[in-house]
Image (cartoon, rainbow, N blue to C red; front, side, top):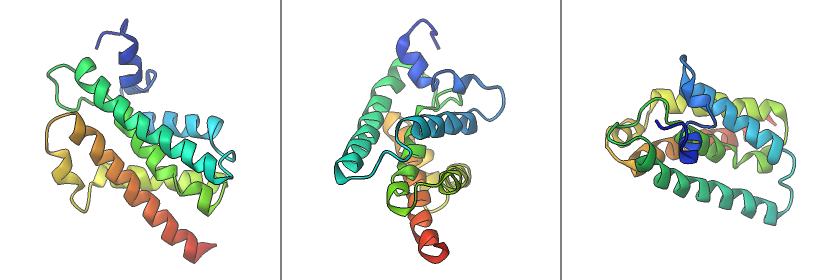
Length: 158
């Protein structure tokens, strides 16, 4: 990737994708940090939810745009972690409804990583396809599964 290109820095998750070990996990940690500093505890009213969901949707489309401009002919290189950012943020959507605790933020991270690595329920099939949409959507689906499972866990644990 061309590190002089500002789109590459988004693609690399602000450098987290350059991690020599588990770049997807490191990217997810960076995504959690962004969520924590900008959204955690600030999503209270319905309008706040709308802003965060709009941010996530816009980030998805940003990923569709930057993927072909930064990875060239490679298919889903490990250094492209913007998809992990978006998937992690999708997993965080229920947090405002469930609870604003750090415990649930950590649970969101763990569940997202499990679904993203394991790729159950058709995620593996989505991941096997080529192109920006499939690279992005498999992480969105993993984040959605993590969010749904968190919602059900919170019903039984809170």
